[in-house]
Image 1 (cartoon, rainbow, N blue to C red):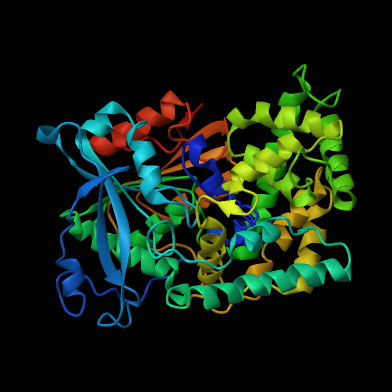
Image 2: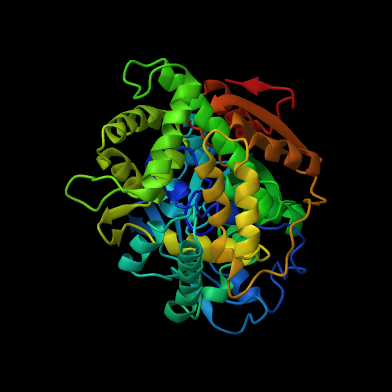
Length: 513
C-alpha cells in the first residue's frame, strides 16, 4: 500500500475489485501494514463481559451477494457494555452440504475494501472442490462498505483530494497538500465522530473471532489478500489456538513502519514499471520506440510535463499529474491492464488524456464527476493512519521523497509514495500497537504466498513474514501483478486447493509461474 493519503492498497485476485486495492497506493503504503504487537489480552469465549457477543447467531437472508446477515460487535472493546456496531456478513453456502468442511472467511485487502462484494466474486472463481466443501464468507470490516461506514469527505472534496499534487515543488504546493491532509483528518471527526476512533485493525481482529464463533466454528479458516494478510497475522498472535488453515497472499511485513512500507512499495512499483516498459517496447502499439529504457524516459517526461500543464481529457476535467500516476500504479496491479495502459499512454503522448483519466476514475471507483461507488477514499486513510505511528511532517516527507527518487527511472512515483503519507502526519490518533515482528504460539500450518514482482506487497515482505511465523511455508509466484491466487497460475491455485482441503503445505522452495 503506498501512501495513505491517496490510494494504492493491497487486494485480491479480481480485476473487478482492483480499484478497491488501488484506492490505497497513494493512500496505501501507510495503510498497508499496521504494526503487529500483541493486542491486549482479548476477552474471548463465552465469559463476561463479551458473552453476549459470542453467544449470538447469524440470521441469514437472501441478498445480492448470496446470503447476508448482521453481526453485532462492541464499538469499543474497552467498554463492551457501551454502544455497538453492526457488521455486514455474507456467505455462499458449500455446494455439497454432505461434504461440508466448514467456513472459509475471506478478506480482499485495502484496508477498507468491501469484503461482502469480494466474497461473492471469489465464490465464483475458487476451485470447484473448495466451493463444494466450504461456505465462502465475507464481511465488510468496521468503517467500510455497509459496516458503519466512515465518511470523511463528500464527493467534491474526494475529487479535489485525489487531484491534489502529490509531488509538491514549491512552499505553496506543500502548504496546500498539508492543509488538505488536515481537512481529511478533521472531516472524519466531524462527519463520523462515533466511529472515527474505533476503526483500527486491533478491533477488526477481535471482530473476526466473534464472527468465527457466530459461524459455529472452533477454528478460523482464512484466505486473506494484501492487508488481509496483516489481519491474519494479527489474529494468529491474539488467538493462536483458534487458527485453522490460513492462506496469506501478498504478505505484509508487520515489523515495518509506514515510511518503511512506502519505501518498499516505491521500489516495488519501479520494478513493475520497468517490466511493463520492457513489455511495451516489444509491442507495435507502444508510444515510444526503442527499448524499455526509452519507454521509461517517455513516461517520466510525460509526468514531468503534467506537473506543469494538465492535458485535455475529452468532455471532462483535464488530466492532472496525480491522476496519471494513479493510472500507472493501478495498471501495475494486473498485467491484464497493461494493454489498456499502453493505449492510454499512446493517447497522452499525442496530447489527449482521456485514457489515463478513465483508468484513474476506475481505480478510485469514481462513477461521476463527484460521485463514488464506495467509501474507500475515506476508509483507507482512516484505518491506515490509525493503525500506524505518525508519519514525519512535511520536512521529513520531503527528505524521503528526495532520497527515494534518487537514481530511479520514474522519480515522480517515488515522490508520490512519500508525500502520500501526509494524512498520517497530521492524524488525530494512532493505535498503541507499534510495528514489530510477528510472534505467535500457534501450531497451525500457514501458507504464505509472495510474488517476485508484486508492486504493492514486495516479495521481501513475504520472506520476512515467513521467518516470523515458524509454522509457515512460503510459496513463490514468479509472475507480475499484485497477489497470485485466482490470477491464472494453475500451480498457485492447486497448491492453495490442496492446503485448504487436506492441510498439505508445499515445500518452501516451491516456485510457481
